[in-house]
Image 1: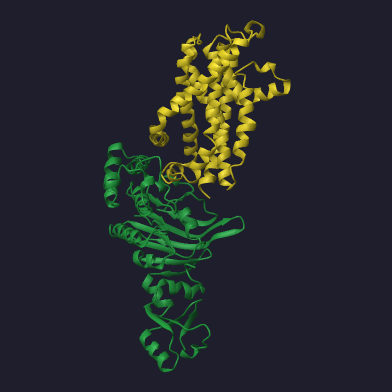
Image 2 (image 1 turned 120 degrees about the vertical axis):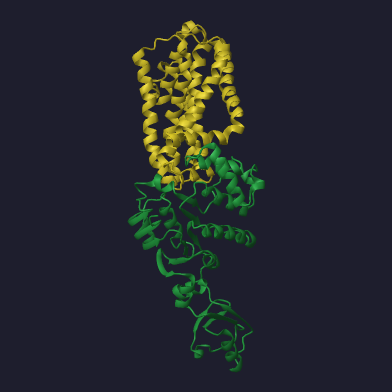
Length: 260
Length: 303
């Protein structure tokens, strides 16, 4: 645990010069969507007819965007950046010559991305409050779910990057992951409209993948929805399961990538 | 102190390729030990197994009496690792590279900072403490990598090709630093394909080729055992047909010159001149580990 702390400290120190920029850009992205889609497209949406269960469209979209942005962070940080750290950057390759183990390194790596999503989610609460969206005190828990949504993507995708590096493969799969997996997931995440609107097959794909669970849980914590306690726990369990399985896989692939 | 390294039948394979082929190796505390050999001889693979990041395929390996597979963290706590690549953190300043690395070894900020200042002095980088790593020269980066590896006062320092790619001046400065470590009684294990480096720094060395150890001993012992005291290097015009076999000495024909192994280079030269075999150019020098390698494998170290 102390070693994990030193890993986070190391990562924090590396990023401290750009941390403010990270926070600003982490807020600007979702804020743009909040304005463009929540307000812009929202003006064209008949909320009563759409049966979204909220007063305004922006109340529906706003919370969901927190989880969707966390997913994007979790995915993008796990690709080129992770591969570079495993290959030529001095941070990971040298860290495993200390008492830190490769498994601890992976846990530190994934949780660090989760921590950044936590910061991003917390900062994003500001525009949410400015738009008058939060209805429940549990809103303060939403950034933690955003962090878990980020790790549910960061752990498995970083594990894949570790595999790619350990096999000496090129990174040609990375843009494919973003275009063919993450972008569709963003669109079919339930952030913009209920996934029940999707064709049945796509709806079930959305239910199996983690982002919808993050979106539903974050929304349920911020505004009044029909989400039950058990339903909330189920969403949480799915996010924990993706994170956990990703960690098990990543501990193996990082070990191979850093030590053959 | 326990034996820093004890390996028996140590083997590392990658698929069908055998990088290290059953080597036996022991290193005593305070010893400065070199692995000499060409690229691909298995030096770096051995180094990576000793540093516990690469699992062994078969045989046995003990570092400070511990099993690297089981006790990796406890072993790494006592190692200083300077890999072939510097692996410095470009996002951190020179001094931060040492401090944040030192924190993994349980140093407090205060201790890590004091240690970093001391090590920057050792590495002659005091005036670059707050510089970005990217602004350092190749030799400075190498010294920083070595300084960082010393932050935990290691009992064993691993140096994989410490001076490869550096200019002669930077190499000599680095040798001086490593010599100082050796004088302090730090156990060193280094790999190199430069024979002068091994002669300068090693108390004892192994010559490796194709994953096996082909000779071992002190540099002077190896020279005495495998080659003569001196080497006479001679060149003849390409069309000349000169018979040197009748000298009765060991010869090595290289592409551009012939090496004649002799205990008295001047005398052999005189003999050549007197018998009408005057070369177009000649040089008498002391035999080196390069000659040992050539004698053992029929190939040169650095092609």
